[in-house]
Picture (cartoon, rainbow, N blue to C red):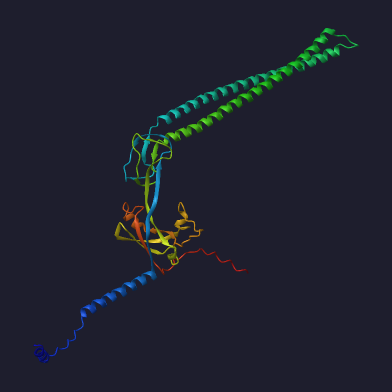
Length: 385
């Protein structure tokens, strides 16, 4: 059996037909087309990225900024009225809330009463001055009268002295002595009258000084009255500017303190603060046009212009700026805030929707022509002849 099988195997091998070679598969043009399309898309995307990185700078670290004015109480008091609601538009001078004016009103009335009393004291001082002046005038008249009597007494004494001497005894010695005594009395009376005049003038000065003191007190009281009236006016908390009211935290019955913030007013004029990297500032100049897209309104692109650059990086204005003078220094690209002013018509059209704090995307095309600056030229000096 083994020999027969060995003879049969070569015969079986001889009858097996030869295997045909595999045919060549045609190329798959669809796959090649897809690969070529992917390559073109990649080249186009890379070219676009290179072009935009070379001709544009942009940042997503941009936000809408605006003026937010705090509204606070200037005096302490209890709120009796609140006249506004959240998000309400207000004008400058509109009353936002009112405080209880009872305490300030009592103080005003008290100072007014003190002023009235002081004014009565001034009237009394004026009357006293007039009275003393009248007394001084009467004393001056009496001085004139005494001086006239002194003249007469001197004449009588001289006349009696001529009539009574060693050669002639026309009058008695008693009459001569009486004439001399009358002259001395007249001199003393004139001196006394003059002293009365001086005393009266001193009283006039004293009365006038007392009147001036009272008038000075009136001026002090009037100043205090003005301050009290101003404090009374502070019971009406008014809007400092025009805008929209937000963050209202005042309610009727609350007791507020001076400086306590009760609300905030946001003005309508807003701008964009874009924090560009310091490596992006080389091609930026004030006046260049900026393409702005607000995240909340992507279908409303805005156009602005660069207004100014911050005087320092944002890190310098931080509460705790980084200290780079250490051994573990790591260089970090700083960002510099750039103020971008929007067009007035865009701000007006989006009033109420464009509010501070919104995120934005700012893009600036490099290579823009620098804005023309008009410089005043001094007139040429006239030629010397």
